[in-house]
Image (cartoon, rainbow, N blue to C red; front, side, top):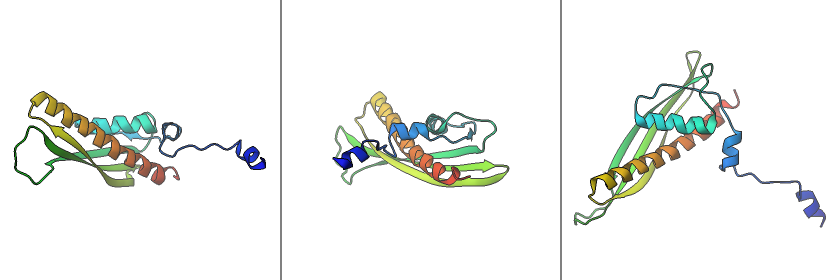
Length: 149
């Protein structure tokens, strides 16, 4: 009975949940995106860390993708399993000095059926999912590296 009274004021908040994401902000100025992939990275990070601030350290990213076919069989079939690996290399610069940098990757599987529009949509969805996953790990790395500054 006493323990329940003591614990009544305690709450648990998940580290990776929406509430934790919205409460952690970091001032960054995002570089101009050169590709759609970079735009997705900047949009994802700004939605989770806070909007672009011109007076903050500059965050820039380079994104590369590597699609591969999964499986060892050469038997043709209507459905092909694929995977897409997105690699994001990022750099944060303040006053001409690098204050954080790194590389993060994420891999997502998707299927193609030979229908061009559906295959393009599946690849685009996999790309967005992988960029979101890699950007989430960058967010955590930036919070760890820069919040102490």
